[in-house]
Length: 337
Image (cartoon, rainbow, N blue to C red; front, side, top):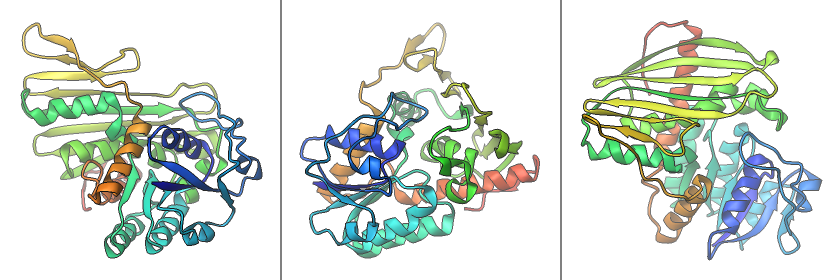
């Protein structure tokens, strides 16, 4: 299967690494406006996880500066979109119309209407569309999903998902809400999407927080109300500088709890009585797992049931509602998505 990667920033380089590790997959084209990156020199790339960028051999890879030429390339089967979020919609729809399968980085789009248009384009043109919501594929989160879905500990009564980091010092577009949606939109869409994946749509929500993008602060504490309990999503950008990236969760069920934080190598299940054990996790990198799953869906002609694009569109809508709720300073609002 032959791929073109659009965008050679932090996520573009991360996806390239994942694609190169999948048997039967070939990256035949890249597209960027960064002339240095088009030479294969990604050594200046940085992000909030992973090490420094690499120098790659792009000798036999076609290099484009205009995405329209990528869509016209008959050797491209699928397009991997790692562009700023405001460009996702047009790029995805253009690729789908050209008969390409599309993997698009999160957030799927800046607004629900654009995300819905992407889903409709995939349906109209019979192509596979998937948003790269990597948390669904991270070992610590797939382990939690298995516990919840098995139902052996009963229903979820309360849960907390946290994710925070310093304001990004890379990719200047991330600090521009018109391009990225802002800090909590870009970062916490991971946890909001995972809550939709695990619990479905909430009935109502409230949120409070603080935004000062000029200072690198964009935080929220949101509560999602379900018939079975309350789920909190918290975090955001914590100033500029050395504040480390971290993500964690605590999920309390009727007959036990599961907890994961950066200090533990695996989630810990606290069951009835003295039952306390680390959950088994796979060693596979989440980015590799999500790209490999997308490839399997394309080759088999099957919709991505583990990460349906309609749910990714709902995640965009729910994040927008959380931002609206934050502006209302704690007022409960109906979840109308």
